[in-house]
Image (cartoon, rainbow, N blue to C red; front, side, top):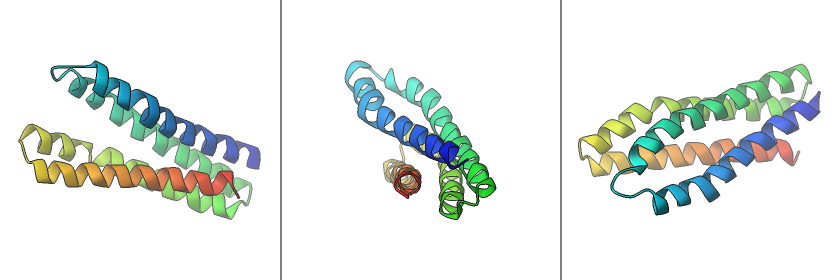
Length: 127
């Protein structure tokens, strides 16, 4: 059953790479006059929820396969995805209220959480 763990980790990495390398640059380049905001506010909750679900799926499959590194990585990916999802309202509120410093800190946290998700999944793929 380790194959499912590898698959879930690969899907997570693929989602992150696709979003970071293709979606975000196109959105910021093509959507003008504040049009990117509503799109990103619709995208990111789904993005982090999907990564959290994939993380818990990875953890469950790895547990059933006695693939302990995968289990720990899956739990880490789930926790990071859930935390990133949960800080979205505070991030949006900081942006809306013009609290640039708070927005920057929360955005940085969400980026670091995404890197944790990517790193956890890379551990699985290369283990």
